[in-house]
Structure formats: C-alpha cells, structure tokens
Image (tube, rainbow, N blue to C red; front, side, top):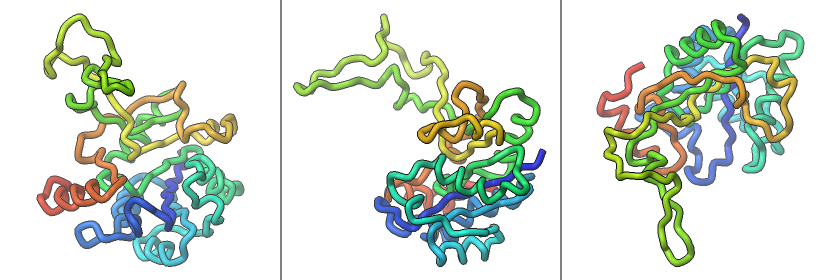
Length: 234
C-alpha cells in the first residue's frame, strides 16, 4: 500500500524554546524522526513546518518540504488533525492509502517500529495502529487518586484490597510516538477528532525507551542521558 509519513514541527515551542532543532546528543531533534522515517518502508516523508530555517534543516536530512504551513496552523490552538489534513490536501493528486503521523518529540521510535505498524495495519481490518507502552506501576490507575480542596485523597478505582505492583493488571498507554491511519478515516472526521480512529485501532507495543516523549526541559535532559549512555540503538 502507498504510505506517506508526515512529520509536524512548528517554530513556537514555549516550554522548550527552539526544541525541534535543538541538538540532542549532537543531532537536531527532528533529525531522529526524519532518519527513522526515511529508513522505513514509507514511500514518501513530508515535513510540515511554518519556519523556513527549520525546513532547511529538514531538507538537509533528506525530508521533503513541499510547502510551508500557514501561521494559523502553527499556534498552540491548532490541532494535530488540522495540520495533518493541510498536508494531505497537498497530496490530492496522488493520495496515499496509509498516513503515518510521526511526532519529532519522540526521537527513539525507530524505522523498525514504523515498519511493524505498517505491516500490522495492512494485515488488519482496523483503521489505525498506534504506539503504546505498558503503564509503569508508579503511574497505574490503581495507584492514582483525586484530591478535594481540603487535600483529602480519594481512590479513582475502588479496590477491595491493597495490590502490590506485581499484582496489577497489565494496562497500556498511548505514547504519541506513532500513529498510522488509513486515508479513508480522514474523510469521516470532525474538526476536533484525533489522528486515529479510537473505535477501530490496534496497538503496537513499544518499550519504555522508544516511548520517551520530550515535552519539557527535564525530558530533554533525560533523552540526552539515554543517548549518551547507549540505551538507545537504532
């Protein structure tokens, strides 16, 4: 099936200024995702940005930058779906069958993950495949509480007994590193829909390292450690 990867990256990151082109262990952050996408079975890799300088960096890694995204699609309020649909409109003459949405803030997702997700989707009857990882025991819903204005804690999930971490049911969370959907899904969505079909999807299980996402300065420092310690291997 004809598959296209779309990598979105805007210039206006607030929590980590200049995040998308900031060097992670000597390489611009966007370089990790572009290299993984180009090494995979995707037929084309499109980089969507509002910034010409970032576009030049993306081109230097081999990504296709056929347009600059309009400023209204590079704000905090712009949805991921609106960015993806904008890119797809530029592909109307040769629409893909599968669309991979690859966030550059997940630098440790590899070409192997992309290929595995493509294969899973091609062999399934679902609309989407998303990257997931097992929920760590410290963040398991059984150990999560709400708090009222008097700081009184209440269980989110009621249990009859205290569970040890090894007794917890296995659960999975979306890791934001990998979304691949059939093109047909985007013909049915509304403006505030996700980039995947929550009613028709399968999960590709990824490990903790490949599921790391960079949202703030601490995440960036941890990602630096992961690369320099050798925990990440393409």
